[in-house]
Amino acid sequence: MDNNNAIGIFDSGIGGTSIWSAIHDLLPDEKTIYLADSKNAPYGQKSKAQIIDLCIKNTDYLLQMDCKLIVIACNTATTNAIKELREKYTIPFIGIEPAIKPAALSSKTKVIGILATQGTLTSDLFNKTAGMFQTTKIIEQVGHGLVQLIEAGEINSEDMSLLLLSYLQPMIDADIDYLVLGCSHYPYLIPQIKKILPDHIHIIDSGEAVARQTKNLLREQVGFTNTKENESLFYTNTNPTVLKDILGKKYNVIEKEF
Ligand code: DGL
Image (tube, rainbow, N blue to C red; front, side, top):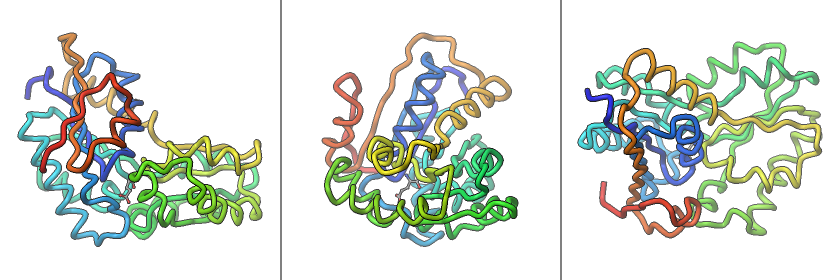
């Protein structure tokens, strides 16, 4: 594998661009190819077998473009399929999981909240991690409807505010001091969430941790690029308008079947 090849990144849609952004900030010279599988979003309500099949499809597409490593920028896909992907392929994978550990270790009230998809919260991998923090109460909430609204470009809509309030108020009442965003789409909701949460509640997501892990893997196994090409390509299999809106004009979005 050529170390000048791109880092491949995929998500069920546009949310994983929050992870791409952290990777791009930390590794600005690296070439990246991002797949937004928005046609199949949301993954969160699909079965494990369906999620694995979609991840295989995305991986095969990125491999056709000679990616040197793959970042699964989706908690639902990681928690349901990373083991199977690692067994099937030789290319290295980096996944994203809800940042329960830092939240549980830093919490003073010993009550934390997690907002994630149903697929993530019911996965074995998530439950194994959550089970390691027995002294912390973890309030789990499925973010029903949030991904659909984000994919539709309705980040600041009234419907979004009402849904978020209904999910977060019980956590506030239960005295959480950390809110874990366990879905890569949700960082786009932080301004909305901040309007609801009292100031003392910290919000954490896993974007920067994934970027650091990507850098370590490049250093230890795959190799950094030695060109200054640093192209960022984005593929989507639906109407590209919302993806273009969140990325801004600078980036090249390609609409394609995959
Ligand atoms: N962005 C994804 C995640 O991190 C998946 C959302 C979905 O497709 O349900 O879980």
